[in-house]
Image (cartoon, rainbow, N blue to C red; front, top):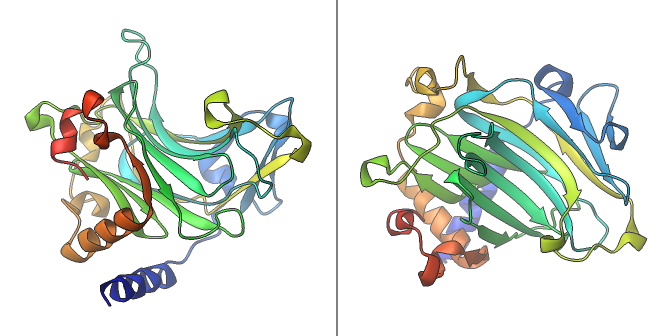
Length: 272
């Protein structure tokens, strides 16, 4: 009965969410693989193509200091490993500490329906949590969302919270303090499996390009911490969201970096 209640709540949340037809060119620009990236005439959909010669990617025009970021995405339909379909926030490289930066990731590793989330907390990352989704992400568009505010980071799939990373700087755990921009890409990686090139080309689809965020005016995020921005008013998930997240994590999370005691990071004591 409890699962039915949670499932009904999640369906209601998905139904209430509606996407817009924001123009890609208003918020983003092509970043690489330009001959493998197609924008429809209305600017409402982008296709990224991956073959043996290249993949493709795009990024936001601005850097941001907080916000509620989302995209609607449909991953490649053809079955393979090794293809990585991404949507993420990332800071500029720290040239004084190469390899250290802030990054918040959604990454589909292959096309088997598993999405990996990751947090780079001014370091090299290794905070992976993976989810075998409750739907086929190659058959229709679904919404992938990241809330980043001064209090917490939350990953949502179709408005269902699946992961949170709280601000624990008072306990000595770093927290994103540099502006980040949005990137999305389709590429291949050996660590993500073996690509079946006989199935190429692989095509990922993206829609719904608007979002709510505070543009950064310098290399800090302090000007974006005010509660006048609605997304900054959320200090924590409410009781219903917490129960919903716990339920979906129990049912669908397939890997959690916090389960590795040998390399357990300090925030595992306070974050889900």
